[in-house]
Image (cartoon, one colour):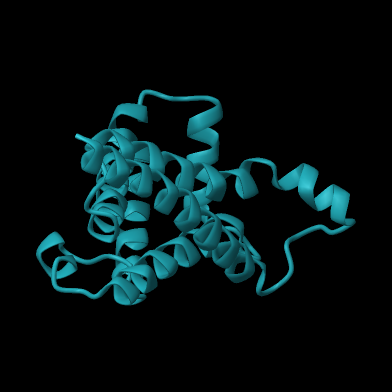
Amino acid sequence: LYLEVLREQFRSVQAQLREHGASRPPEELSHLAHDELVAVLRSRIDTILELLIGPSPSLHATLMQREMSDPSEALPVIVDEFIVPMTEEMGEIVSHLFPELLASDVESCVRSIAGQMLFYRFAMPALLYVQGRDQYPRGMPSKVAEHILDFSLGGVARIASRRKRGARAR
């Protein structure tokens, strides 16, 4: 029963990503201009943050946080059916934005972006305490998404620039 609840949550997240234009097949990504790819990544970060931190975080966020801090026998299913596909999708976006990156660069960049998003969920009790709130204010996920996008694009661009310089030096 628990696995079916998780799978339903996975389907719901995927549907929300598609609804917001944040999930595109790789062949479609290859036809998008740079600004359009940035918009897809922005929408993806924004949609995921909305689910993670709300206001009123989703059931999915609560289940994922519980599994990450106290894994059950469902963890392999979560990894195989949700985490791997989600990171692969984001990896496709990043690799289309910065084609000079190595696969290992893309993987590290995706983990960094995901880590920034997860920070606001996992550290939520402490962050809310510091802010004197009982929940994040409306609009916060969007503001955080903009920051994560800008910060991440700057970092990924720097890594891509180093790859370009290294390729020219050879």
